[in-house]
Length: 210
Ligand code: CO
Figure 1 (cartoon, rainbow, N blue to C red):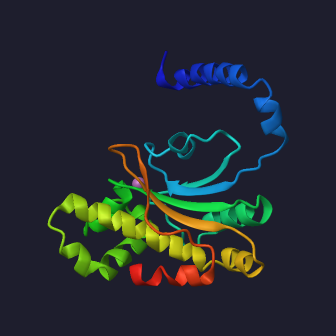
Figure 2: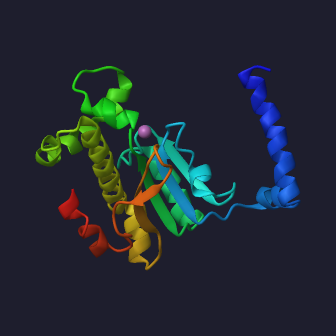
Figure 3: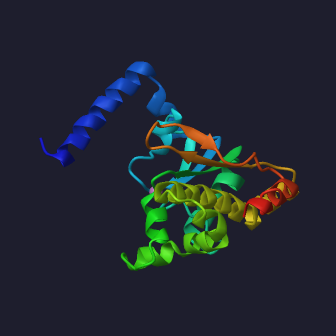
């Protein structure tokens, strides 16, 4: 059986397992989704949102791109955010980066390698410049990349706080609560990088970290 055919075999086995655990699973999921979380993560194949959080289909709305970016002009992430906040009414929006992120590594390399991807990673280069003093003081290159990955998450959480969708929700006294996490490929654990952000003043508390 080739790798592609294996997907269908796995799929049928997964359906059998799910039905055994919960005979109404697909019937219920087909009617509606009521996720409490929006997960904005990296496209990296080693960071699957549902699997690392132990959540099932229906529990987490997901957006992934290279290096978990939240650009104020990216209609893709903004429409996912708007739908999650205004229609699905998610309680939590999570930006989840990961250590050893190839996107962060590529951004930290000065030479151009990948064409369009280099454009995509431009904000990480700005973040690296903003935190140049802290990063240059780190002698271990791996530690420097990992710290840049953490700073990237904090910046993307702050970018979320500036979106009209989040500001308008907060003005109406509504959720979401924003979170910044980083995932370790080495031990599989998630770590919180910032306190929960659910008001403009909590967003301002991020400023000294930017
Ligand atoms: Co990555």
